[in-house]
Image (cartoon, rainbow, N blue to C red; front, side, top):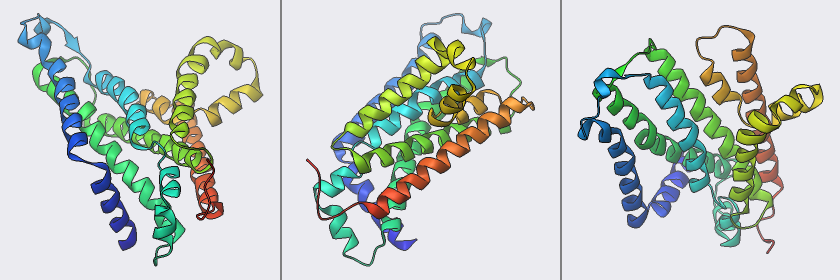
Amino acid sequence: MKNIITLVKFDLKKYWSISRIITFMIFAIIINFFVLVPNYFNFPVTEIKINMLTIMQGLLSFFVPVSVLFFTGAIIFSDKRSFYLRTILTRPISRDEYLFSKYLFSLINLLIATLFFAIFPTILSFIIYNDNGESGFFQYFFTYLFYIIEGLLFISISITLSFVVNSYLNIFMLAIWIFLENTLINGVLANFVSYSKSLAIITDFFFPSGFSDAAKLIGNVGVLFWESLLWGLTALAFFFTLSIYLNLKTKIDTISE
């Protein structure tokens, strides 16, 4: 565990340059400022009832995948290309420790991003505007938890792709993956897929929407909630296991250009 923490600290220091911190804070200020705009211009928001749980779900559904795209570009390939991976593994550090450090690094960045871009705006909205929802603390907590776990699923897919593709192509492929999940499966092809059991199984397994679907069904004790959650856990287990396998098989002395 000590080696993992050391690697994560090094990656965080290397990633978070002054310019990145400034850019991140500017975007965070802009996002939170938009929450204040209706109140600042005296719009009649006091007469509007706003469901904060819905707002948080909307923010998380956008910023979780976007954050993963920003933080995991070429996350493995860049280390192979610079021979940093070979340098690390010549020390008393195992391949598993290296891989888990990448997961932890990505997860910490995801938590930071969602804190500034989703949690703070939601809290600010809750303070300023009315909330017509009857959501309790645990509904907010599990909604956030499920979206974070879905982010971990995106991270596992991105890391897996980064073992086998060059440069930032893993992010491009993950972006296409998310686009298909949001547009084709839930939109254009939804009815077509529903008529085929095999296609339905493939889409449930390979398109990472199980955790977000479960988050939207919180409070529903029916089968749909547990079905969505189990599909998400299955997909996470698959890609996590695949990343471990590729980590064990990857060559550290050669790279493909």
